[in-house]
Image (cartoon, rainbow, N blue to C red; front, side, top):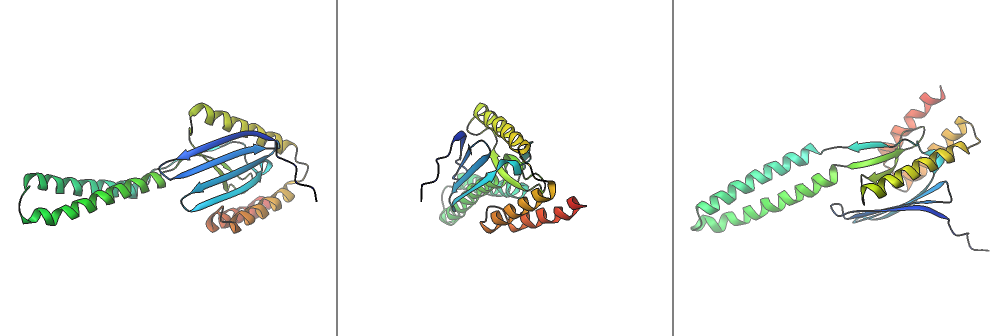
Length: 207
């Protein structure tokens, strides 16, 4: 059996998020495919997409995790109160008792900061054409605005070209998309919740 033919790489984007301890690599290859690799503390995920199943117009998603922001504020105020008390009372038996609590609040503050950064996405998303399921999530302006914009524009043009070359009807496209989404769900690339939400859109489109 002969070896598989090597890929023809069109464009690559590598993004590193120090806050998440994560590296995302996106590679457009053979004119109409996208390879996505995500490396983080939980392991590696890799999947491939045919660009014709993507909507060519990306969506900016910028959210703030207010829960973790409020947690940061609470622990910061508590740590500040302990620090003020320790400065005003540098001696005495209470000092040795309060220092561990001060350290704990500082650690909780740092943990809340990390969770705030992790839960507050600033991404540009490409969704599936019919079901609207997020399949590509790019860290906004990472590694730099120029490189990011060039890759997004290249990806948009490749998606449009791949879509124009499709020669099957909408019904077949719907079947292909939900089949691909089911495979991505089974591989833990998308969540069960995302898959169910995507599946529910199918009957409305058939009408």
